[in-house]
Length: 187
Image (cartoon, rainbow, N blue to C red; front, side, top):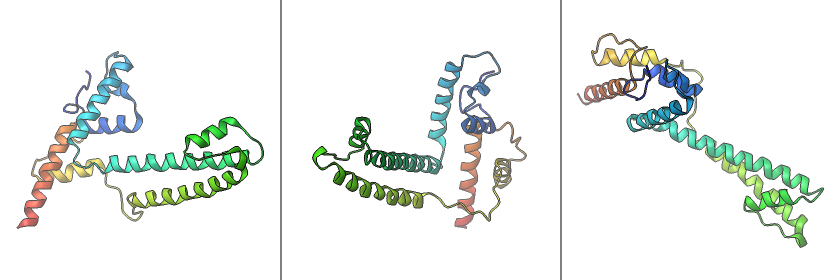
């Protein structure tokens, strides 16, 4: 069998593949990896359309931006240090690609300015880190099984085999549960 849509893939399997990128788990047949990667991309797109919680994408984008700025900061820092001792055209080109200006007639002064400007990247990195959600170390993490079973109880769905619930069933259950919570809050 090949899990080829979000509608049929068990949510636990989906989350495992998302964490490990082991697309071979989509099939118990001898399916080429390239084909499985295409299927996985389709499943992820279907998931994103249904996922009411886009927070993870926001966190991922902020984290990527932080990492990118940190790499730029570190590369600039090391390039300036090296160029203070010896000229290297590749490093000069790298700094120019990063948007810094280097004039050979005022080279050392330009390096000092770049060094100061580079430190401002650390401020930007810290601002982005402050936008990330804070983890509360005192709370116990809720397992996926607990989430599914609590929503099943809330919606009076009866017992649900948490190992077999598909992605679309999971989001339908969450949506029903959230509506039930809202209706209880409005009473």
